Length: 581
Image (cartoon, rainbow, N blue to C red; front, side, top):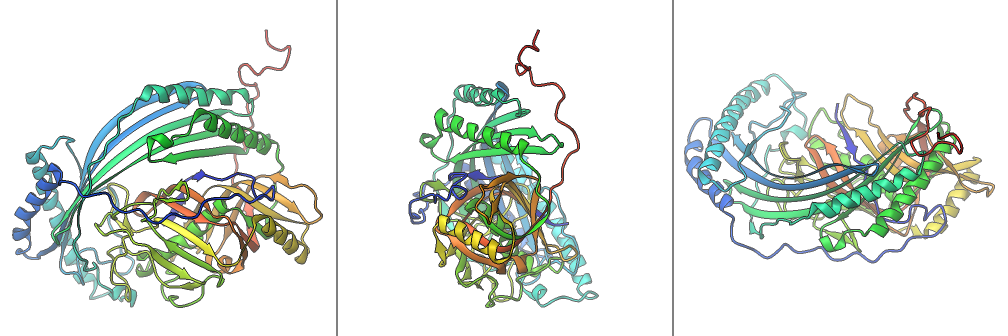
């Protein structure tokens, strides 16, 4: 079963901007940033090149010959501080290095990675841990052992593939080459690292979680601060030599409650930044904590909503996840080639799949939009290809796919979207998915249009989806081509002008080809959603940017729930007046 889970993401604009009919404002996008100035190759990169130069002449002459060898070394520095309910849970810092080796035998047209029919590619982690020290001898030995292992596995796989091809039919998509021919790239940016005092953050997570104890409805609270610095070094037999790094800081606030009927209520918020000077101050974090607290308390008391199909308005945050799930995964190139995939868009290039006022592009080269960082930024992908802006949909018409080095007929080159979590094989994945509209109105006007659509359909109410926990989508051919998005903050908007009513207990469901055609209009204020997306090649950082949208018909179903009742006893320090001894 192939699914994608879009992890809970950071909310960057006023939570109730649409509910209040007040559009949020943001600066215009800034131009894409340029790579950092070149630096001297690190000792590890030099060592990797030396060992590759030793191995290549031998493996390129044996039978079957290796036509491609590539190495990626990822050096990771991580610090994490976690607190709960006013106390420190953990505080730690670590360093590690992971070496990944790829050996391809055969040719660019047909090699050991070729998928025949419904055959399943090997899963699990590949690569090995190596010392964090620059010990050339130890690193070269690890490369040698991994190369031998990968070459033997590739040779055996190619024999099986050649045998299977004789007895299994192949689709037109499967006749595309197995690996794209690309120009080598050479770039060295300075190695990155961070210096962090954890003690101040230990005090801060105590402070932030202690504030949540004031609410008896909050059963648990967790605040996590993390700092992640990664340097990546890549060398390939084609001549690519890359060295680049990134630092990312994140602060996550998470609280849990429970409604009287047993339904779990969760609220989440996170801050992301790359410059220590941009870290949120205590006032901003505590203020957001109070917003989460009030929302959770209101949701605990909110009524359930029954299954519904009708007009709905999604804020920009919800819209971003909607497009990520409904469209984004189906525009990933490898899904058009794999016969086990639904191949929703494989043969729809040049056809209209969205209303003609919508365009979509994916641009991992953008670090920010306005003052908001985009988590899907990277200078080179995990196959050594420079990140590129790709126009996926132009005025409603499908034009392109996010491509890795796994070619498609008509799309023979990567556009820098081969991505993976450390230890997984790269495939084409999203980076920064950005939705643009030429039919936009103010968010206040969009709300008016929602009410008009409710009346036109003879409904008593419509839905305003204002915050999302995440979602997933099925893309496999043997599964329903459906998606599910999990809203957290939902309002009933009434046709007769009554105040909006907060409700709970629903998930958005639907099928992509139908849902995408029911968009009537959009707001004029894009919003950013940052998070981590889990799919075939593991969990990767992504961003989605979109304005609010009005949909003529959206279906919601009852949310899976727990039957455990809330605790019988009140939390300590929250006994009723006079009950405490």
